[in-house]
Amino acid sequence: MYIYVVDESDHLLGFTDLKELLQADDKTLLKDIMVGNVISLRTGYTLKESAQEFGQYGFRALPVVDEEARLIGSIPYRDVMNLAHQFIE
Figure (cartoon, rainbow, N blue to C red):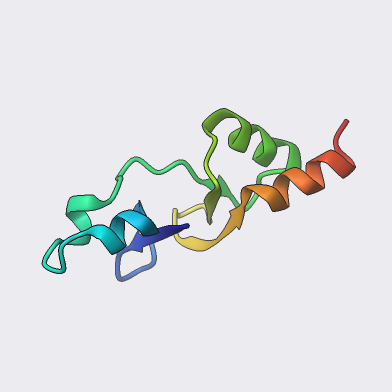
């Protein structure tokens, strides 16, 4: 889905869609096709807060970062929404 771009300390810098990356010229730099304003989930977010972020922005997945904006991983929309439908009224 998405490729997340990080610096040498794993701080999240941006993202690009995998499709866009595959269609780019082989000399294209990531910084030229990535989106720098990244919506992310924090490790301390609740399931409800995470579901709200997905609902507001409509991404297929969101990166998860720690308190220092280091990339921890990513979580797909379907995983959060499946859990939200089971546990949140």
